[in-house]
Length: 95
Image 1 (tube, rainbow, N blue to C red):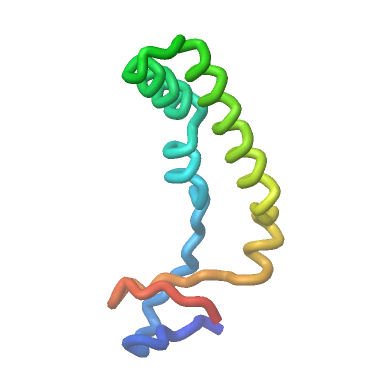
Image 2 (image 1 turned 90 degrees about the vertical axis):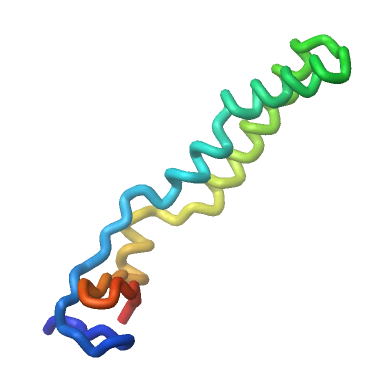
């Protein structure tokens, strides 16, 4: 049985499969970004840039480890909350 959109009551609904749930956070919390940020902050304050490199790498590692611990396996997440997208009103919902 196909689900019906709770917003507009349309039957033009498809299953919304999101494969890149981490895409933005992985890009924003990348080690390259933190290393570059650490180096530029150290250069601004006239500190050895190697300290910024090490600090940026350490911060990126801690954030990535915390994200991995908080993430659920994709199969478990899909089994718990299947998401649907209405083609008529672009509303996403779960049943």
